[in-house]
Amino acid sequence: MGILDRINSSEDIKQLKDYKLVPLCKEIREFLIDNLSKTGGHLASNLGTVELSVALHRVYDSSKDRIVFDVGHQSYTHKIITGRKEKFPTLRQYGGLSGYPKPNESDDDAFIAGHASNSVSVAVGMAKARTISGEDYDVVALLGDGALTGGLAYEGLAYAGASGEPMVIILNDNNMSIDTNVGGIAKLLQKMRVRQGYISFKRWYKAVFTKLPRLYAFNHRIKEWLKWHILPGNMFSSMGLYYLGPVDGHDVKELEHVLRWARDRREPVLVHVLTKKGKGCDFAEERPECYHGVGPFDPVTGELPPEKDSFSEKFGEYLCEFAEKNDRICAITAAMASGTGLDAFAKKFPDRFIDTGIAEGHSTAMAAGLAKQGMLPVFAVYSSFEQRGFDMLIHDISLLNLHVVLGIDRAGIVGGDGETHNGVFDVSYLSSVPGLTLLCPSNFNELHDMLESALFEINGPVAIRYPRGGEGRYKESRKEQESIIKEGSDVTLACYGTMVNEMLSAAEKLEKLGISAEIVKISAVKPENYPLCINSVRKTGRLVVSEEVCESGCVGERILTLAALSGVALNKVKLLNLGEGIVAHGDRALLMREKGIDAEAVAKAASELCRQ
Image 1 (tube, rainbow, N blue to C red):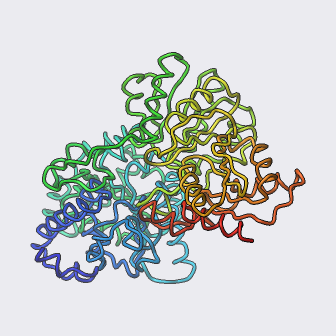
Image 2: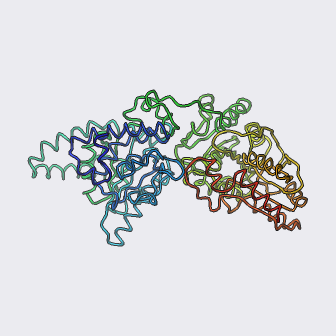
Image 3: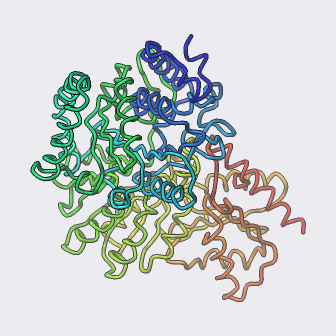
């Protein structure tokens, strides 16, 4: 790590001699593999952007210029360069280095980035602010080609091209998001990639004719006129963006040259860069989808620890089971087939499997169209990503009461990904959708039974929310909207989903203190009608609700409202939740303890109520 040891800022990169850039990139890759093998993180995407990140810091000053990442999982090299390499042993751990750009972590991070397709919109806003305020800095948006499957990217590109604001948009084209890219844009980029020979010709042409500046300038004007008036333009040029590329994304000197050229044009420029996901690491290059986001692994062989059964995998397994019996069932993913457990469905029922790319709004609306024409669409999507589809949930699905099933994956605290990925707002926003039934399984058996009910028994839209990872100690399956799983007389403990495991542990702690706790498990959060819970509270006079969601719109608030409407006076209540819902990255159990929603916190709250 001889060269990397001396890199602590963007300025250090600029001072390096050209011949040191290639060995520096090699050292960065070795650093990434070594560190991520211990902590886990986003491996393949960062291995693919090493040269690009180095070139960016050779051209721009990230402490002043604004480099806006699109899905910041490709920002690790940027963090290494900007003085944070010593913190990599704490990556994605509580109190440690975030796996995404965070302005409150470093001034070199221009903007937070966890979801796709927004970078151009954010960057053009920054460019516009620069113009209005008369300041002097450059703006760059770095988006992956997977982000071009999201509609917001085109809104940003269209405005950026029309605005004339000087800025550079880098399209990191590796033919991948998490899984292989799909759709018309992927095919368009594939055609554009075959033009790499054109770049080689341009290098030769410039090397020869720059020795004859007048002839070069004359020929360049003719070429530009022909390009705009005779030759067909590409999509980006039609949007008003000056297109450069494709460029070899692993030639650091060529990248630096092209980025300087793009910056100095002082207009909206799109630089099309070709990279290989997992570059420089055999096992990550061969299976980039497996090493997109990983836990600790063997740095030599790439061997990953055996995976435990998860709600995601079980959801996909059960969906295949029901699809065998009903040919109207089809599955939709927004570029997350492996993440949501739909791989098996894709292989088994390819004609009924739909990958829309990173397009949650489109996926939700498409599900509405499928349902309207008699299909049984199931859209499996991460909780934090379906936030983008909220309008479609109401306008396209709810108003016609269409039978669409949503698998709301990664509900609750997700761990290392942190604020941008925690699924803590879904209970609030899904509960506001008219006519929607919201089910919360506590284990795999309940997931199976609830999916069966959602497909074949419940009318209208249905959402099933389940967490990342596996089940806990509670294994029974309850189909009732509510059930009392432990009777008691002193305090009511209300819960739903896998939080039942915390409640069972809390009840055991309370039993040792001589306190009898009654546990009410809610299986259907919506419709909002909890008679067993209200009756239990009427009996015990005390209530503790613990939820892995934000405070606004939480179930505890609804129970209190229903209790008041039922004439039950409650003054011994404790609602445990995640407050405004902004939860840092870190181990889930640790975060639950820190936020005061685990078994220990429940037992403490209940015992305090009983002492009042």
